Length: 140
Image 1: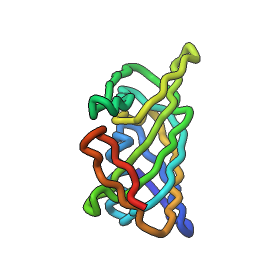
Image 2: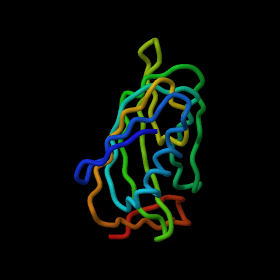
Image 3: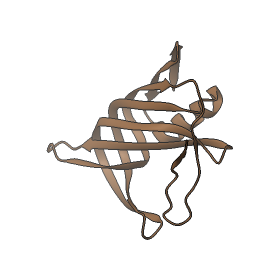
Image 4: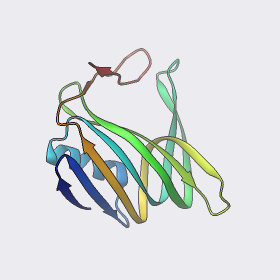
């Protein structure tokens, strides 16, 4: 992963073979990003998406093998329980037949590149895990 900081914005390039979620979490930890917005595009393989089931307090997970365009990556970074970066990212991926799939991005390997902007708000957003539904709402 390569990145450059410009003002409050990080311009990030995640390289082929890197796991995207852990790379972003590592950057947030290294740079002490405690509140930010994320957007990006790229290409992925071995993608795991989740659909949140609050009544069960967990995610329904779906694994996708093969090559996918990362058509949209949107989300945020907060600080979970005031101890570690928490990434809440959603993705829309597309296959070679122009079908799309979307959900919480749980994991994925970058196929060629992922180009991502992280817009730091310059302040901390704290989230706390909700035991009842498994969500991590912001504590504002």
